[in-house]
Length: 137
Image 1 (cartoon, rainbow, N blue to C red):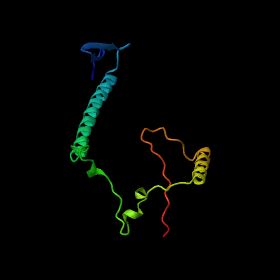
Image 2 (cartoon, one colour; image 1 turned 135 degrees about the vertical axis):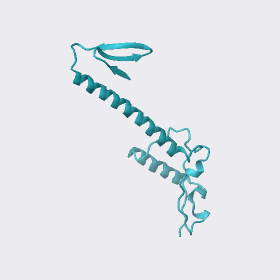
Image 3 (cartoon, rainbow, N blue to C red; image 1 turned 90 degrees about the horizontal axis):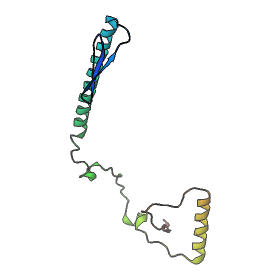
Image 4 (spheres, rainbow, N blue to C red; image 1 turned 180 degrees about the vertical axis):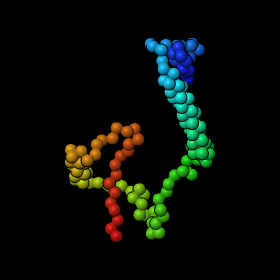
């Protein structure tokens, strides 16, 4: 915050009073305009602070411990009637590959790498890839 007087503009920084003197004698109208802007700025800052407090209050009142109850905020997929565990591909066992099939798969992976459709993972969470035969319906 700063104050406007006829000698200049005064403010406090680190408990020290600083005066910015005017080069020439200001017109009263200009001083009044600066005072109005100063008051408007302080009013705007206070208004923003109150809006921020009310926003934080209303947005977080139901989420006081949101990080402890994560399942309450998770979205699930809709239920499918004909879904069974046998249709879930993550439950299928990997197939045993012959040497020729493994060679073919490595060649296919290399082609996809060359086309830059995917890249090798550098993640610590990566895992081996499984080829799964899908059931014929």
